[in-house]
Length: 463
Ligand SMILES: Cc1cc2nc3c(=O)[nH]c(=O)nc-3n(C[C@H](O)[C@H](O)[C@H](O)COP(=O)(O)OP(=O)(O)OC[C@H]3O[C@@H](n4cnc5c(N)ncnc54)[C@H](O)[C@@H]3O)c2cc1C
Image (cartoon, rainbow, N blue to C red; front, top):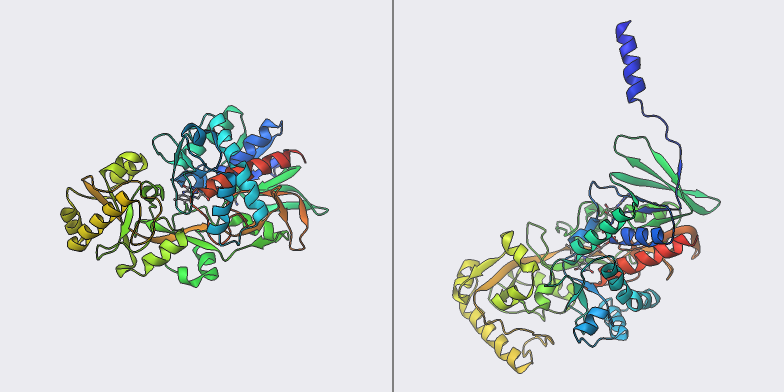
């Protein structure tokens, strides 16, 4: 008898009660850069926003972004005397994406990216340094002063802004289904650890759940050649947002366009930002020879690297490059960098050909002085790489970015397989396709997520 009483008491305390549906104006799925940009924007337009994040932490892949955020005709560029144009950013993006990009989306991206820099700086962020990234004809990669990590700065700024505004962000809350009524998206069903499935009704839903580089099954199904490749992404990048959309008839574009990044530490998945090459580093192989214009796009550099002995390269730089970029200090602290007081010492530690390496470096220094890369036609050679000590990181390609995803229009509305807008549904960031075409330029994802995140937030608020 006593046992039964206790059991029923316990079950009444611990039973999971059915939870009544809540009401919000907007539900955002994913608390990365796109989702938080959308949430802050919609909140500031007077909307009640709920953000669902499946992981225990905020920021997704955006936390990991290292290099910068591309924007042309920005205020920081003007301050630094950098002459750049939106047209040039547009042309570089189309060229980098092999013209597979949707030009209308690229036009929106490049026209609004400078305002995205203002948005982050206006919220208290620091994107005031501007550097070079591969595939760009001008310095337009915005990052914290001294060349620190861009993603951490953007996430910190957006999380602080969300806290100041008391935006309702729920972690370990996985969106499982979009609620559709009479053809319109009117809410989201989600599960939070230890709780029964819950529903939030809303006037609009924004999918900002990121890409799928960490979904090895899907990646290798699309491109079997990527079997066994490591990824630079966080484990939450599994493409849930694409599936959620597809289940209610959303169309996708460019799903087969998967990018590898050429400078990832083998076996560790640690990515070395492109800004290291942008600030002057070169790539050599085990023979101590350069093998590519290091500022070519990622697809080209990755392919060249896979042709080298051992399918690896060595990212090589000197003390001058180290001093120019704060991000390098964290790579050194993490033990990823080999140091040599001389080129002979470095070559010996790396077990690469010292005679060839010295010849390579001497040719490079001469070419840099003459402002003409006699070997590979690299246009920007900011430093001669002659200041000891010398540094190197062994690198190989890893799965980095998924250019494909949900089809959107320039208002960030999701399009269905019949070419029609799905009412009430928006998407922004890496979960979408069409912005980057066949190859994303370094720095353009951060521009994409802050720009289309803001657009999705603004338009969803108008619903
Ligand atoms: C190592 C690295 C370095 C990079 N460096 C740069 C750079 O320098 N410049 C640049 O432009 N780009 C860079 N990128 C790319 C860029 O960081 C990403 O493309 C971008 O941050 C994606 O932002 P997002 O908001 O779309 O997605 P994310 O930031 O990944 O956010 C998506 C969020 O959605 C959550 N989520 C997923 N599914 C669900 C679900 N079912 N329910 C609830 N939540 C869900 C995820 O957990 C995640 O937190 C880099 C990427 C990596 C991995």
